[in-house]
Length: 300
Image (cartoon, rainbow, N blue to C red):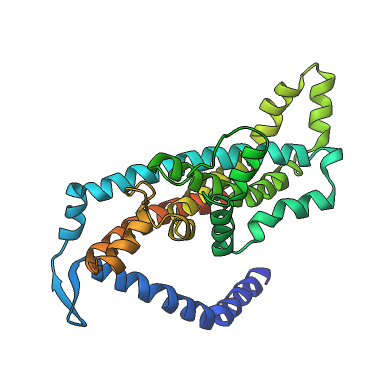
């Protein structure tokens, strides 16, 4: 009887959410399919019209000889790796501090969320003002305390510009990861730490053998989500550097935009975008796997 009721309940649930799922499938499915088809064509805008020629996998083969794409891929690899390491590391450290009795103030948590709450473009514009070489706050502050003799052009060289973009994105990303880590830390039973202390474990041993294993899923989720977001970075590049200087801040996502809308090579731009989509899709599968409930010990 219970089984029959459960099946009926599930069928009713499917019927109720079916309209919304159809709409979502249409909204998401059409752009994905359309983009995949464009990636298999040579699509150029000529005389105000789209000139489309089926070329198969030629756009994807072009990537292996495109030095601009290879440069953007290296920039993306460096940017993503450093961002994940910094955001997860700093986020975990801040979460550990906020998990202490003296760090559980609501004001501190509100202050923490401010960078995350700022709109992406507003965040980029704010940092453009801070990093300005003529009247930027960063230059004024460093000169006032004597760390620099003259105003610096922080976005003037490729490596410096890329690292400042990294700084901006890390600053914005830390709050969410910190809250994620904090939620994981607050699920660790305090009795375990007390028992470890009674057994003679120091703070580092308690962190290594109790805290880290208990929050490994939260860390895994943070790593995957941050990797996905690092592949999608666009707004700060568009506002702060437009890919310069000397293409030093061109990441794959921005390259797909530039190839499509600046060079009007729509087919090749779609191919680059599809590569990014495949990477994020694979990471999303890993994210869902981590969220999947794990069977408890002894469960059949």
